[in-house]
Image 1 (tube, rainbow, N blue to C red):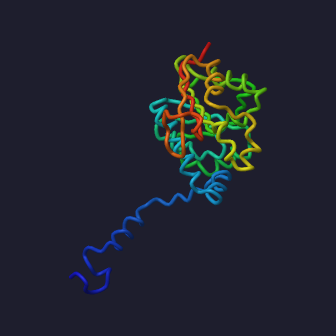
Image 2 (tube, rainbow, N blue to C red):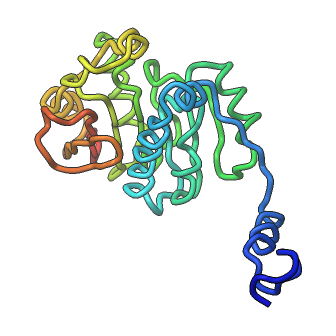
Length: 232
């Protein structure tokens, strides 16, 4: 019957097949938060870059029962981590953003949003993993030591900490809005030194766009520190 009749009358019609598949998809209609919506409009490739950062976190802490996100922002990456962890507790110090996250992302049963300020104290219940994506560069140097000490103290004895931050070498290419908020950029040496004061083992990785590697640090746009065994 090839080439005859209406498309819907043919037994093997790809349009009919796709409409059937489409009709069976769940319709969640989840909105992006303020930060990622802005990125999607002004620089859409950033969505892919940020998703890749959270995918790295998810791979590194896979199997952990409870993990903490420090400075979760609009919660964009939490669902990626929630795929591999038992429960993700996303913390931030912006109450309006947290309320918006609870409204938009309530569909994920193992993600919760809490107000918590690591500049002031450590989390009361130690967890297996803590991660901070695009946070450290927003912490003033005068707050850094206590901030990192409290994060390390929130981990179990052999817990894992993950810290992702833009490389100081890439500041020349940052947008004006990024520069406004970046008060504590570091190169690879400064990042390792800062975290080495709080963890026995610190492993530094480079990242360019979606790719994480062990290449030449000064040419990396983004840096990762994988930290193991918090100092007591």
